[in-house]
Length: 166
Image (cartoon, rainbow, N blue to C red):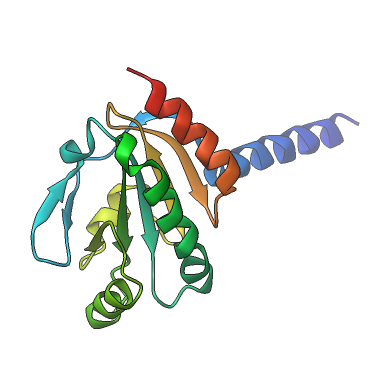
């Protein structure tokens, strides 16, 4: 009987940890990173401060990423005048020519970076699954992590709440 209780407790803990990995909430500082943008310029984590920013790790070969991109664009367009920004970070395995072509043909209105070395994905929690998206508050703190396509209605509510903060 005791053995079953221990196994049940261990399974419950493992499940809780697993859910925490995929639906991370809570506030932590965004990791220090340098993003190399398509135009060759650089942006750092410090540059995110002062705006609510969506950092979206994606790949042109990821069907969910491609499918959610119109919603990411619409979210950017809806809130950008209020102090909201988006930074799309292409994974290291994505051929740069594909990323440039995607950004140009889809007319992505926000900054796009290519993580050539994988160092940015590693710093942001060893991102391997795409899309993985982080919402960063005005203080440069990660307030939400999404693995897979976010619930955009819920995301919009959180963005509005964060934009209202001083």
